[in-house]
Image (tube, rainbow, N blue to C red; front, top):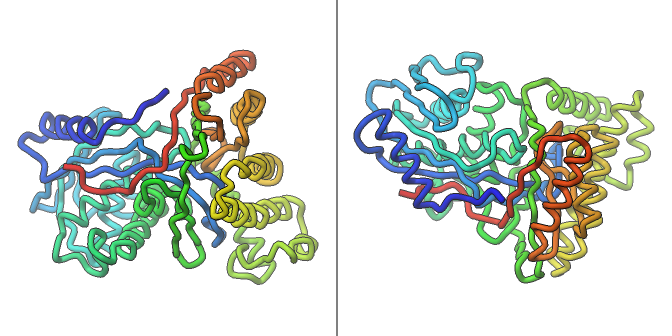
Length: 402
């Protein structure tokens, strides 16, 4: 199992990387979590509902402001030090992983935040390329670090004050701009909202039409359950065109149906909406989005009723819809889901954007190793690279840790 770092160990690792690279001490260390989405996939950019939790696995950023407008970035996962000028950052101007933190600085500056230059070191235990939002964790850690550093000069609601959720919603929007416009990944806003706005012990019901949220209790331990995350090691990438293609198809379908987003299609009117579309691909994409939003509503209703053990069939149906109608699964994800179910999972599904990445399985407490062994054996039989596993417990949002 991939265990999360403690806050103390993560902060010490980032601080040591900073000191070795830049000398002296950082102004502080901030961290932000990765996420898994319980249900509600590819709904965020369609104005829909989704239900993520924050992982205990986090990205740590040690940062020190500098007065010359320069940027220096180093990561324990990457080679070399990236240097640039804040004034030169913008769409298409930065490549690779530095586009994410530099993009956050650019996006916040666009919102009127007096962003200083800075040096920063990154350390992370969020698995890379696993569909667990390592990029959003990176962005969010920088966002809270910059917001803290600005202090009283911060415009709008304080992300650490009494109206912090509104301030964190602003940070999330900036992180989305960074990912969309500077890093070039056409994601929706779920990942950043989860990293910045989740609460310990809860799932975040996010309404992507208006940005509103509700914290939904998600107490796995009380139900003698665990959530196993299966990293298939089939690396996914959101900048290879497949994700953007799905988004473009949905936006074109919404335009054809004369609605702002697919969220406006009531499930009761789905048959009529599908009949109004002219091609089968659009019909299948729309069918997934509308039915997935309905599954989120049903999932939350079960949690509100204390029936967490009954959500498994919704997870199974979500995966089938993603596999058949949205066509974002892959052989590794399907094998992981099928093997977990055969080993006793109450429900299982892919999570994240797809085309690789991770699956989740709702399992009996104490059965993680036996389910993991069954999935590993199924991967070996299929000739796939051995998967990796972690236990997801609903955790807290981005914040200062040292």
